[in-house]
Image 1 (cartoon, rainbow, N blue to C red):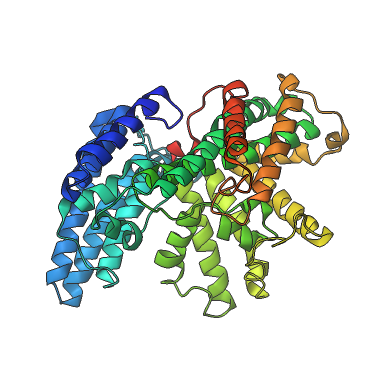
Image 2 (cartoon, one colour):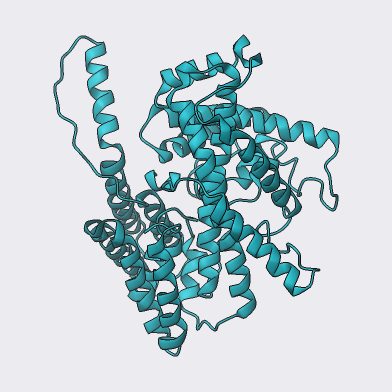
Length: 482
C-alpha cells in the first residue's frame, strides 16, 4: 500500500478511529490492532510474503527468550548466530542470489570455463532490508544485555511490523521503539497536529518534488547517449532532488503517521543537502541506516581507534556494505566506495567532526565560506548519485565522461523540457522552506507559528493546493526496491 494512494487515504482514518475510539482502553488490544493493520498494510502488496515477516518475528522472539535464560557464552553466541543466519539468509536469497550467481558464472567464463546455470525469477519482498535490520537490532541488543527480552509477543510483533515504517524505515532500534508498546498511550492533540504537518510536507516532497523530478531524471538517464553534458548535469541534479524528496518524504510521512498514534520515531533526515562536508552529509542522510552500521558493524570492527590501516579498512567496509545494502548491482558498491574515498581525508586529518552544529545557526543567510562548502559537498554527492542511478558501471562512466566533456557548456535540451522552468521555480520554493526550517525536526514544524490561525491555515492549504495542481505522475517510492 502506497502512502500517496487512495487506498492509504481510506485505510489510515479507519485505523485511527479504531485505535483511539474502540481499543483505546486496552493496551493489548491497541497493540493487536497495530499488528493486524500492519499485516493488512503489507499484505495489500503481496499477502504471500507476510509469512516472511511472521517467521522472522517468531525466530527473533524465541531467540530473545532463550537468551534471557542462557548464561553460557558459547550457547548465547550460537543463539545470536541463529538469528543472524535466518535474517540475513532470507535477505541474501531474495536480494542477492542472482547477483552472486551471475558474477560466479562470469568469473568462470573469464578463466575459460563454461558454467551453465539458470538464474531464478525471484520477487524481492518490499521492505525486507528494513525489517530484517530492525529485528536484528533487537537480538543483538538482547545478546549484549543492553535490552531486556520481551515476554509480550503481541508488542514484539507490533514492533517488527509497525506499518508506518515497515517498508522503508526509519530502521528503528528496539531500545527506542519496543518500550513504547509497553506504555499506555493517550491522545496528544499537539503531537497529532505536528504529525499532520509532517505528513503534509512529506507528501509535498513526494508528489511535487520527487515525482516531477523523476520525469526529468528518467528521461535524461534513460536516453543519456542522446544528450549533451549540460543536459546530463541537469539529469543528475534532478535525480538528487528526486531521491531526497522521495526518501525523506517517505520518512516524514512515516514519522508523522506514527505521531498520530502516539509514537516517536527517530529522525531519518536532517537537511543533508545543506552539509558542509561529506562527514556531515552522512550524519544527516538516512540517519537510521548509517547509525545502524556504525553501532553494529563499524564500532565492533574497531571503529577509528586503531592505526591508519584499520581506519581505512573499516571506512571502506562500512561504506561498501552500505552501498551493497541498497541493491545487488556493482553500481551501488562503487557508490559506497566513492563515498568512502570522499570521507577518508576528513577522518585521517581528524576533521570529520568539524561541522556538528546547524549551518549558519541563528542567521538568515550563510556566509560565502559556508556557501562554497555546501556547493562543493553537493557537487561531490551529485557525482556519486550518477553511479546510484545508472543501469550499470559502463553507463555511469559514459554518463560522467559526457557530463564533464566540453558539451557541458552547450545549451540544455531534452524531451519534456517545457517542464524545466516550472520545476526550477518549485525547487527554489522548496529549498527556501527547507533552509528556513533547517534547525527544526521538519521543515514546516514552526512555519508561520507567529501568524494568526487563518494565515497559518492559508499556508497549509497553499501547500495542499500546490500538491494538487503541481503533482507529478505517480511513481513508486524509490526505496521500495531496497
